Length: 95
Image 1: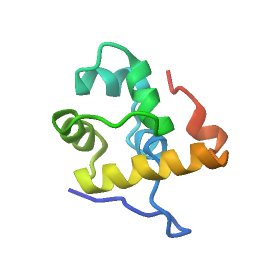
Image 2 (image 1 turned 180 degrees about the vertical axis):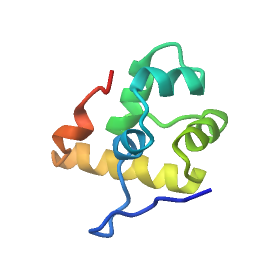
Image 3 (image 1 turned 90 degrees about the vertical axis):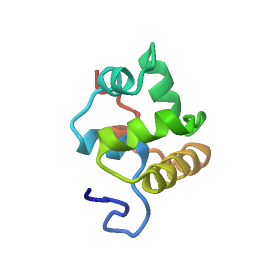
Image 4 (image 1 turned 180 degrees about the horizontal axis):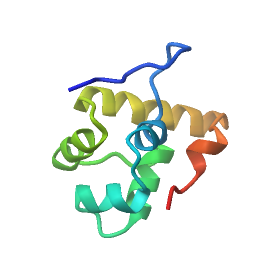
């Protein structure tokens, strides 16, 4: 499994960046991980929600990364959201 854990500037990619790289919409990723609504995935993208381990494994598999890389991406998403540095692309719903 390819583990895309850093970008050119040496920070972990955000969860949204991983999703976009994987070519998945919020709805498709939510469906894959067993969420009833894409809003749960959007909350993960903002870093305001963390998935349970079972769903984290499904999300990591869908995104082509390890669970550890997924956790780092969620932490980076939270950090950017809290600091107000979220890219416009990261905030797109992808639906």
